[in-house]
Image 1 (cartoon, rainbow, N blue to C red):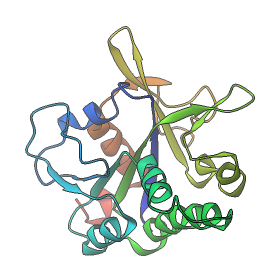
Image 2: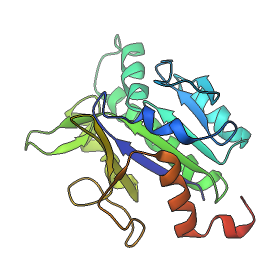
Image 3: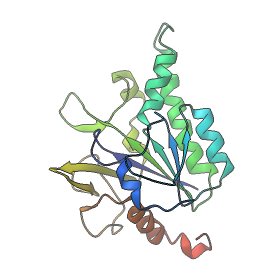
Image 4: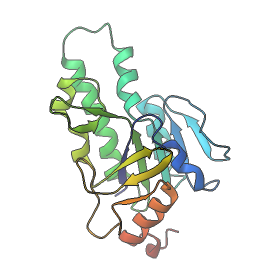
Length: 206
C-alpha cells in the first residue's frame, strides 16, 4: 500500500519551499494551482487541477514520491465548476472524490510510494486548527486529518521555517518516527525518515 502524508500550513509557511532538497527524478510535483515553485529547480512539475490528471500520473507509477501542491484547491476548483448545481448532494460527492483519491493511494500504489498532500489550514468554530475544506457540510462528511497516519504542520516563525511533528492537534506522527517535535522544513529529510522508519529501502525499492 502507498503512504499518504498530510502537510498542513498557511500560505507562506514554507510548504512548497520544503521541496528544495529533492533532486531531479526523485519526486514529481502535481501542481494543482499551476504555480511556479519558490526556488530554482529541475524537479518534474505537472499541471494537475483535476482528479483525473492526478490519477493518471499516479497510475503511471514512475516515481517513489509525489507531491500534490496545493491539495485543497482540488476541492475549491470542483466547487467552482459545479457552482450552478442546486442542492447539497454535490458536497457529499466532492468529499467522496477526495476520499477516493486517498483510497487509491493507500490501496493501489506500491508499498514504497509516498504521496505528500500540501494543504492550507483553517480555524474551526471552536478555534482549533484544521485542514481547509469548502464548508461545514464537507467537514461533517469527511474529517481529512483522520484519514492520515502522518500529519505535519509547516510554520514560519519570523523567517525560521520548520515542521511540527507532534505536540498539538491535528499534528501526529507514529511513535519514534521523529526524535524532535520540531524539525527543519526539509521534505527530503522527512521522506528519508519515513522510508527508514518503515524499512522501505530494505525491500529493494531504493
